[in-house]
Structures are given as structure tokens and as C-alpha cells.
Length: 469
Image (cartoon, rainbow, N blue to C red):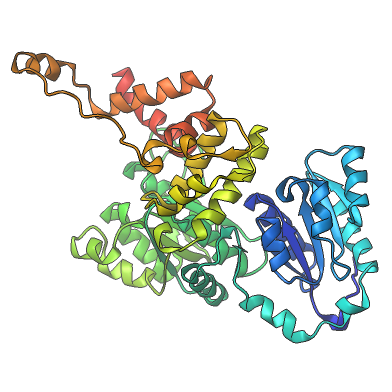
């Protein structure tokens, strides 16, 4: 489909949606189907959209901006606005059009509908938009990003990360991502992959800490039939599946030393053999590794081979903890609140002053993942239009977590020792109780426990052998 555009310049498409997944999906679709024709960017709030200075086409989610009645605040003659909503009723569509939208698309948005509406929006392009100087388009890349490839935030620390990603993406050299747990290392790897070439190339992620060391080699390099008990057929590994794209090795410092030697050979030559096989295979992959530990300490301790580390540590990038990202925490919290409120059918639209102050002053040791889980738990467990300080978990709200238990009398110490359960059994009971409280809904139970759903799946799998024993 051909799109006319002024002076062969890419036209800005501003996607206003609190859900970063929706923004990524639409931006990826636009980049894939209209390479060079559009420059898609994302915003998590209407305020960010208004402040963005975009002079192109806006696709605005009504739930994100506060409903059709708020559209009039965003309408600009130099920026045709297409409204979208998961609530696809005729009443909402008419209200959006009356408020100034040139079109309405119900969610989920298909490729055909998207490009038909963009073509129609191009026809409304005004003379002012056509005349915008080339310098404005160049400034887009330098502007503080409120949303960048799934990241949310425009603090100086994150703008430096965005610039690193832009510069590193075109290279084929290995990238090494470091940062505390919950800072978004996999999201960073996905961003590097998405900026490095065509979107259809594979991105394959392996968490080296979540797979038993007996199976990790097979997961990376694959196996042939009969290589070990249970290997009923030939199976390609992550390296083959990622051929032509990106292989992301998360928590690389957790990998067994014997496998690190085989990985080193793969990094050096690009070739490997499946477990139990003799055929030498060769692939072309971009390697991205990550760890939440200090890699230099791990090398000194002998847990990470120095030769492998220096092969992988060609283009280093460090993700800052949330406590070093200035006011990004409030932007992130608002984006999470709007997304989860929409998912759970709640009316939450913001935080009151005290809740906002507590969120800003908390250290967030679990970083963005902890913030996301806290907001999800608030939305699931409470009702209202504003999050209050009373809804925050105790450590964030500033209260005492619990009074200290009394010291047990000496006569009962032996009884207490008998009552002590193994740690894995205590974890199992806690998770089982949460699942029971939420009717077996793993996502809600994980939100209440402030852990990821994948942790519950992994823990339950690890308990199978222990329970049977």
C-alpha cells in the first residue's frame, strides 16, 4: 500500500496507550508493514502525548486518556486523531467523533483496519503539517523518551540507556547487560533486537537459572533422538531457533562451568553439535547476555570463566535501579495502574498526594518488577478512583511490618524445633494458600505475593519430585 508523505519524510504516528504491550505491537506492525513511511512513537498518558510536540497522526486509547470527553483537549488541526477502545460500541464511536477524532478503531486492531485508517488520515494532512521542517523530524530522536521500546521513563539515566541501545543495535557484536533484578534486562535485550533489523527475525530467550544444569545444554544446543532418557525425537535448541536473529542468555553467571566451555567455543566459531549428535551445525546469531550480579566479582570467584566473559562483554550496558531514576517511578506507577485497572475492570485513575509521596520516597529494592507487582495487588484487592496511602503494602506505607514475636520459653524450644519445616515446604504452603484464596488464578496469586507468575510455575515444577518422595 503506497502512502503519500511530505518531501518523502516519515510521518510521525504517536500511539497513546497505557499498555506497553499494545504500544509495542502497533509500533512493530507499523515498522514492519510501512518501513520508512512512518516513525511510530509511544506515550503512556495523555499529558505526555500533549507535551510530545508530535505533528503527525495520533492513535489514542480512550481508556488511557480518560474517555471520549477528554479527546477535545488533545485535538490539534496539525495532528489527525484516530480513537481506539476495547469497548467497541456505537455510542463510544460517535462520542469520539463528536469530540474531534477523525476515525474510530475497536480493539483488537488488525493490520488491514490500521492501514486503511492511516491512509484515510493521510488525506486530512494539513498544509501546516506538510511544511514542518526536517529539523523537527531529526529532533524526535533526541527528545526525552517517555516510552522507548517498552521502557517507560525519561530520566537522564534512562535516556543514556536508550542512546546505548540505539548505538549498539546495528552491530552484530555481543552485548552484556547488567543490572539488579527487576530493572528490565530482558526488555533491554528485546529492544536491541527490535532496533537491529527486520522484525520477523527470531528472538529466543533462555533463563540459565531456571533450567536444571542437566538440561541446559540440550535447551541451548538441542539433542538427537536417544541422547538421554526421554529424548524421543530430534529437537533443535535455542541456538538453532535463533539462527538469523538474537539469542538472549539471561543470568549467564548461573550457567555450569562445564557448559561455559562449550558456549565459549560456540561464541568463537558459531558452530556446535546437538547433545548426542555428531553433525557440526553452524548458525548466525546475535548474542545478548545478562546478569543481576557483578560479573567481575563472579569472574574473580571462579563462577564465570574469564575467557567467556571477555568474549561476551564486548558492548556492556548497565540498567540503573529504580531508586536512581528520579521521577520515573510515578510515571511507571501511573502506567501500571491504568493498565491493570482496565484488565480488572476497576475505576482507578491515579494516586492521591500521600500515596504518591510514599511511592516516591520508597527505595524499591525489587525495582520496576516490584513496583508493577505492588500496583497489580492494589488494583486486585481494592476499589476506588484514587489509590490512597492506606492501600499501599505496609513497608511502602511507612508502618511497621509486624511486632516482634515474643521469645519462646526455654521449655518449648524443642517443640519449636520439631515444628520447623524445610524452606521449600514453607514456600509451597504459602503459594498453595494464595492460589486457594484466588480460586487457582495464578496471575492474581502472584500479584498478591509480589512475585511473577513464572516463579509459581517454576516452584511447582521443582516440588514434584520432593512431594512424590
